[in-house]
Length: 389
Ligand SMILES: *Cc1c(COP(=O)(O)O)cnc(C)c1O
Image (cartoon, rainbow, N blue to C red; front, side, top):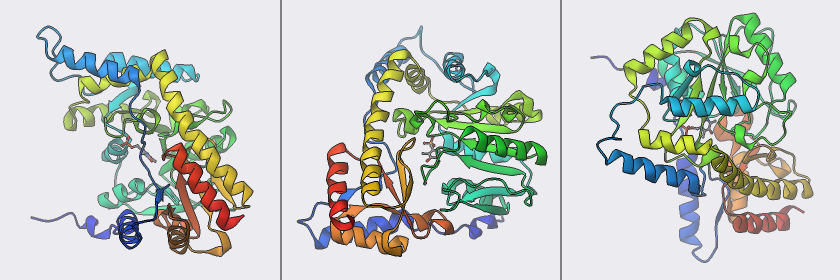
C-alpha cells in the first residue's frame, strides 16, 4: 500500500483556524466588548420564498408513488439545464443543453475537472487566490506557476507571452480581491489561451454581483472562449445555496473530446444532485426567484458600498466592493496583514481576513466582506473612521 505522497506537498492552512483562535482569546479576555465579524466568507440571508416553496413542493412529490424520483440523470434534469440555458441566453450566450452539467457546487467540479488533464501540464494561477485551485493541483502532483496580482495591475494580472501555460485559472469577480475583469482584459486572456492551445478554467461564482452590463458575467461573452474555456458557476453566493449545494459547469462541445470525457467522468463517479435541490435551483431562475435573489444581493452590495465609501473617506487604497461582496484594502501605515488584523481586533473589535493567507502578494493587504448585517457593517465602519480619518 502506497500513499499519495503529493499530499505531503500541501501547505498547511492556518488562516481560518488562527483567526478563530485569536478572536476567541480576545472575547474571553474582553467579555464586555462587542466584536463585529467582517471576515465572513459565507452568505447569511436565508433562502428566498420562491426557493422554499419549490423545496416544499418537491419534498411532497417524493412522498407520493406517482411522482417519486430515484436516480436522476448524472448531468442534471432537463428542467434545470433548460433554466440555466435560458439564464445564459439572457446575457447573450447560446449554449446547447448537453454543454450544461448540474453539480453539487463549484468547488467539487473545480477539483474533479482535473481528472481530464494529464500530469505534465503547466498550471497558471493568480496570486493571491482562492486556495482550491492550487491545492487540487498539488494533490494531483502538478507544478503550479503563479502570475502576480498586485497594486500595480489593480489585482487584475494580464497574460505574459513569455510563460507557456496549459491550464489557466481565472476568477472574476475575484475572491479574495473583488476585482473584476472587463471585456478587453478577458479577451486578452482568451487570445493568449487560443495561441498557447491552453484551457481556461473560469470561475464565475460571483457573476450575480455584477451590475454593469459592460462587464462580462460569463467568459463566453468573449469571442473564441467556447474554443478554450470551461466555466464553473454556483448558486452558493448568488442565491444563498452554500448549505443547499447546487452549481453548474459548462463544457462546450467546441473543446473536442473534453465534453465527452466529462460526461464519462460524471456518469462514472457522480450520481447527480438531489431532485429536491434541483427544483429549488430551477426556482432561482424563475422571474420571481430572480427578483428575490437580487434583493438579497443588493443587501450585500449596499454593505459593500458602506465599507468602500468609508475606505475612500479614510484615503485607504482598495479594490472590489462594487461588483463583489469582497473589499480588498491596503493596510494603512504599511502594516503587515496580521499586524493589521491584531490592530483592528484590539482597537475597534473588527475581524477581517489577512490578505497574506491567500498568497505572497496578499501580504500587506486585508479582506473585508459584506456578508454581515447592515447594522453591524455601519457600526464597524463608524469605528473604522475613528481610527483612520
Ligand atoms: C464560494 C466560492 C465558490 C463556490 O463554491 P461552492 O462549492 O459552489 O459552494 C467557488 N469559487 C469561489 C472563488 C468561491 O469563493
